[in-house]
Length: 278
Image 1 (cartoon, rainbow, N blue to C red):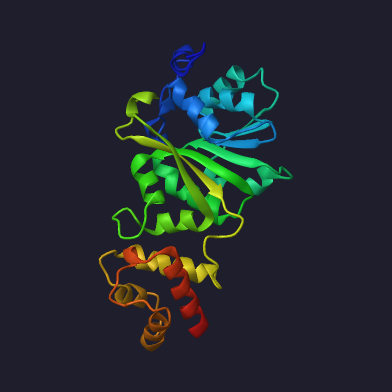
Image 2: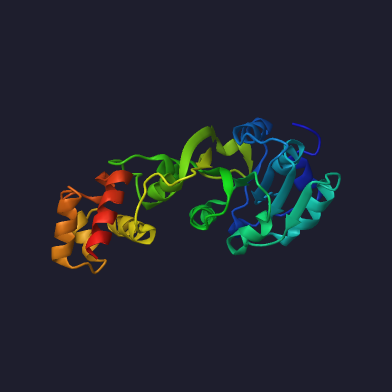
């Protein structure tokens, strides 16, 4: 580990971790290297980093990228980041909550935009949803998240992990698992294993649907109560019974099936049949 490693910086500034912010800083230099290489960063890239901590990953990103815009919520980390990264002209910092940031404002005219983040576990799903539903022009999102969430994202039908989050991510992205990360790679140690995954934004969504809003409503309703059949789950949308029966028939989907058995293509087909009949 190079000079001014995470541990040294934390001790130097006597930084106190805030449990409610889910702060777990990386102390493993090999993981840092694997994240930067896994994200395939080059000197044309504009990087947005969420949660830079004390800046150890940020420093590696700054060496590889054209520019790094870091978004940090904890005001106590701002002076540390400014001091530790003062030698890098391509570094910028925003002291804000990433869930409240207008990413279009940050991206501006930049063309090759990649997001890199060691995401606090408690905001993983809301941040992924914001980034994907916001239709921002990211090329990729390389994120370190709880292993269990990573497995949910990459899961296939007929598994207990498969759900609305799997379909949201797979609708917009190709998924590549870069590596697993053990708790000992962080300070303080989290109680769970982590995983680094890269989500490559597709030019076109995985399935073409006539009504995207309806598609995701159907997906969410199908998983809200996993044990229910599609027939019972979709009735909660207030769709007329005859219409629902006809749509399921036209989509060639047995109403007794459960949402977790449907592929993304089947959800697309069902959504379009319902949309036509509505």
